[in-house]
Length: 214
Image (tube, rainbow, N blue to C red; front, side, top):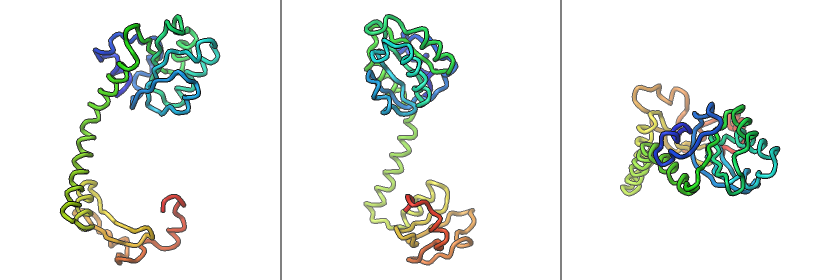
């Protein structure tokens, strides 16, 4: 889902885009509600931000910096509900948002934060449905293998079929547990000396691996 999708959603038709039209292709992954400047550190890239503007209502400098910070974090768009703390959305915020391409929407009276959150998250779920369905199918297949008592050979065949590549199983000491080739690929034994229970890689290679990998 991208910001531009919000403009065509009937439930959000009253949202008013007032700045940042050059950023309508920004990707939306989630939604967050915030009225605490300290919470900016908790915001993740791809999160639409909904706010009343309480914490930046008294300072144009803070308003401008907030817009810049959001863009740097990767926020797709900012939705502000004025009237309660801000009479209108400040012109200086609109100017900065236009310069950096961060869309700003004005939330009208009668449209709650929770309504916006539910609508956007529901749309994201719909767009991710094929991925979720595939993930559930894969989970089910491996669950069936476990119920049937399938060992590494059964698991490796299934995994190789899913990823379309050969599969190698190693233990925590980089020792070979099992491997499985796929048809129409270069045999793995052209590159590795496969011996079950023996380290697959030499010491020189293992010493070059990042510490976090094991």
